Image 1 (cartoon, rainbow, N blue to C red):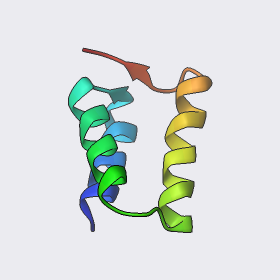
Image 2 (cartoon, rainbow, N blue to C red):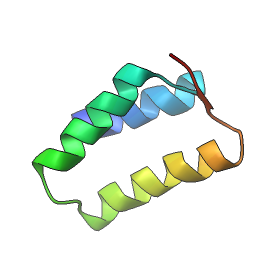
Image 3 (cartoon, helix red, strand yellow):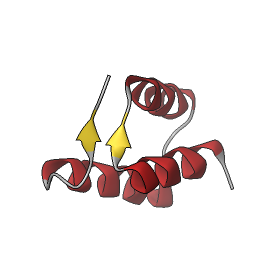
Image 4 (cartoon, helix red, strand yellow):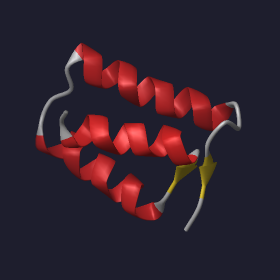
Length: 58
């Protein structure tokens, strides 16, 4: 599993997006171009946030 997959798995397991998670995702995405699978993972997080299934915490 990649760091991206681990981070997203943790976000869904805890139902929380921390500032650290946000920074890690931004760092990962800025270092490489996104594959279609990576884009789908990011879309899953965004959709869960918009639906209230994941909370943003500090």
